[in-house]
Image: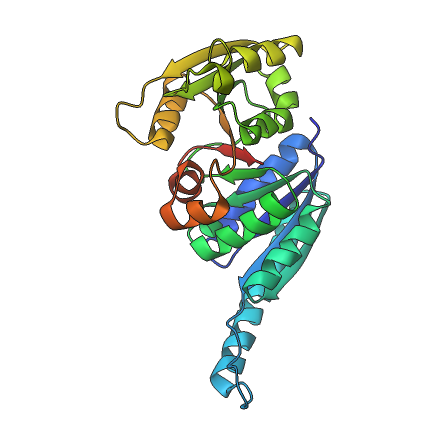
Length: 276
């Protein structure tokens, strides 16, 4: 596989479980695991007065907690014989995104688990820095289901947009290796200028030229959310992984009104690879 550096984002919620999922991925790929233990710092009081003792005490407590998680992660990686490095990122909002961006530039995939995803603010910073700025794929690793980057059967969520095409290219090596890839379109736009003569046919032909075994499926949502349709169908076909593009609309619109990607980030109980 082409993923040789795995960047795992670990927060202060369920760090052991999130780290375990990341170590499983790195072990499977025989990849280097770079662990970033992340904490969002509370901004200091603005104005003419220095930060109060409450703020300083909170900062010291946060740093002690993150330092403990860093040491725990290093011990676990060493015990499991992994090639690894561990670092702490502790900064205010936008600066966290910048640090994640810098680290993600030298990784092949960014991994987050349920612990990180339980914090929507932290998740947004990771998406901003890792997916939008560094343009790295993001892997969601739910604790209740095995996650693999050597999937036997895959589901590619397709809508004939650039984001979906980029996701397909990021996952191409996996698709070639897989036994079967289901290209799934939910309520597809059948107009020629959007999806060609037959929705899904163009991407199926592209993948087939690379030796991918492709099945094209057009599904009706029946009024259900698209993310629900995708996850339910992934279970029906016994898929190991969903691959999808990030954010079909503008980032601002997604953040205010939600959307398929936002819902997947928040609620998916299924392994998902997201790219843009």
